[in-house]
Image (cartoon, rainbow, N blue to C red; front, side, top):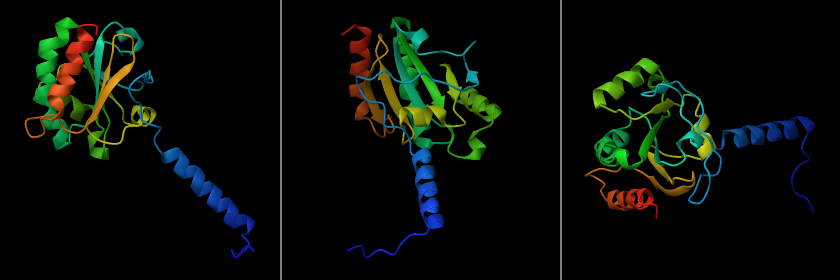
Amino acid sequence: MNRLPALTTLTRLAILTAASLLTLATPARAVTAGQTPPELTGGPWLNAPAPLTLAGLKGRVVLVNFWVYSCVNCHNSLPTLKGWYGQYRAQGLEIIGVHTPEFESDKPTASVQAALKEDRVTWPVVQDNARTNWRAWGIRAWPTFLLIDRQGQVRYSHRGEISARFPQAIPVLDAQIRALLAGK
């Protein structure tokens, strides 16, 4: 026996509408190791003469960093990223920053450019103000790092700060980078 009251057509419509909106707001399933990630979209691209594509970066090892300049954990991770960029870039490493704002105040391009200059970030960064990449990749936290091999497959991901404060992931990511650069 059904003990729930009969739903009116208007109530059913409201429930379906709410469920649809929740589905649209839910991020995609997270990109994981062994998958080909979606292409990066949006812009503008900063520190790059033209938009980059993952397809165009095949043959290089790519570290994609989802971040926002106002995030302290993201900021604390910059020295580690700078070290890797300086050490491994000539060997085939490219870092791509995906700047995904948390707040409206994080969106102005001039503010992102000023932060890049102040922090001496030189790798390419795409602005993701509409969170298109964030949703397509299923990202849920700042910072998130995804390591992509020379064939374009995700090989490793890490969520959270990589710094002297939280050093556990640094040797693991470093070993993954070195292995991928060596072609292993």
